[in-house]
View (cartoon, one colour):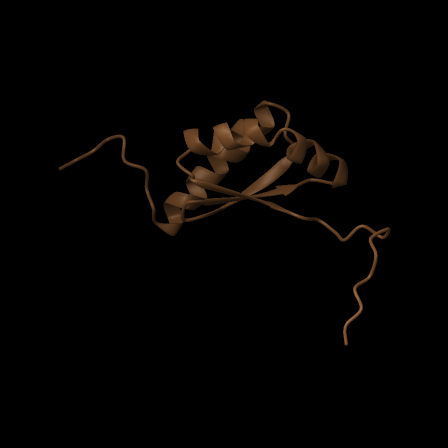
Length: 90
């Protein structure tokens, strides 16, 4: 059975979908790159300002990943904020 609406699940398919998703996100103002891993879209913000904006607009990003065949989204954290408290290890 040939389903023309089927979403590819191979690594190559995920990469193509990631590229398409990246273009779509940039078109609506997200400054980021996207890495597709199977059904996971890993969004890497261009900078810390873009990271905060993507986090604030996560519902828009979630809508876009679904349109492009992904089921999960991860926002890669760029760096640990300097003002965070350190954890003591015993």
